[in-house]
Length: 477
Ligand code: NAD
Image (cartoon, rainbow, N blue to C red; front, side, top):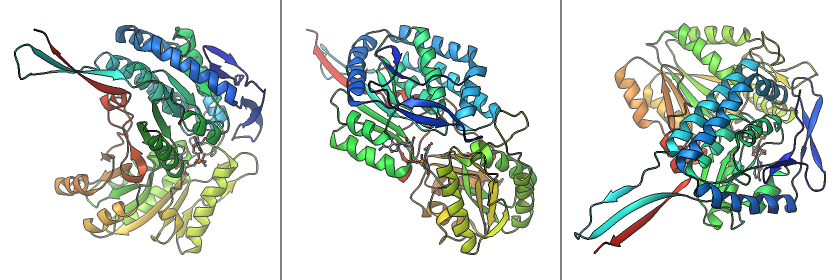
């Protein structure tokens, strides 16, 4: 069932020129399920030349025709959804239902971007003379180099590919080597839809070798990256050196505010679902739970009961609610932060251990009475760990929320209008979801501020990120 992993260059799936591969492992079993080709310089040169030719063709294809092809690819993914979801779960670990949700969101994003590309309007500017005509037109920026992660191997790739193609750009994607099968299946859908060769390329390999070759290359005109803050800063600096615009969707450490005027049971249940989705390997995952002292004990009781009820197992099994972490490296990283917090005096209310020796499983974990000295309160856990602290006043939570350099998502649960508007105004983040979970729709802004990056991968801004403005002025006399 797991597909053969090949590079996609110049409209053809093929092995790397030297035949080298990286093993792909099923994180639920530890078994090797395949191998991803490692692109060489000559493979990358071919991908770049093809992207250059593909751009010339695609930019002169009408937005109307581009839209039709992108929507056709979305329809093909819809038809193959069960098959691609199984590949995604096998290589990444998330429960099958979550894989299907990711694919459902992805095809929505494709449809939305495809239509938005048809509305990439410029503007006419009133001139200072009767015969002068002035206008601003929007043009595709050029061939794009994109780097996508393993936590949402399909939707993160689709956010970049959908927006770039809708804008008229060609794009070469280096997808994550941990999870190459679902990107291959998605790119195959574009191939089968008839997207011309050179418009889309797919590479795997040694990440630093690929980025340090593609980013400086003059054919590439735009960089887009989703991943960790240190790698993002490195790539952003490289993009700056070569004067290339970049979109950076980096890590987070989302604060959660639970005030004492909410339905505590409902709030805890909502947050359990959100916290343990994708085993917490989500850039917008709720992480620092700041709970009002009046409801602290009640919230903790309910949240811990919820965490204990999460069924952990192989994502292919119907009753599984949380799968493994993506690999052993992540299990060690998460456990190191948990043990550091416990050593520092945090109260371990549930979890805090790996489960079994087969597969990269870690228990849904809740740590209470955490302090700002602990590593987990400063570094992104990127795992199934909730860090809970009590507070008594709103100033305290605003200070804590803004203490870290991250500024991606935040979660507010409060009924008082004054409380909500104060949080909305004072918390320095790119996204705030209030009294429900509402982040990540195709039509809404998706992105962070400060160390969490810049640019947007949702809403009209997602497509605008692949366009540049050109001013035209003409004397028609
Ligand atoms: P990592 O920093 O080693 O890698 C993160 C991603 O960046 C991977 O997909 C990797 O292939 C890629 N990458 C690494 N070095 C690169 C380079 N020089 N050029 C291009 N791409 C490169 O971290 P990891 O252990 O794989 O993942 C854990 C961390 O990554 C987490 O702490 C989290 O912050 C971050 N992450 C964030 C997101 C997100 O959605 N923002 C997604 C995945 C991972």
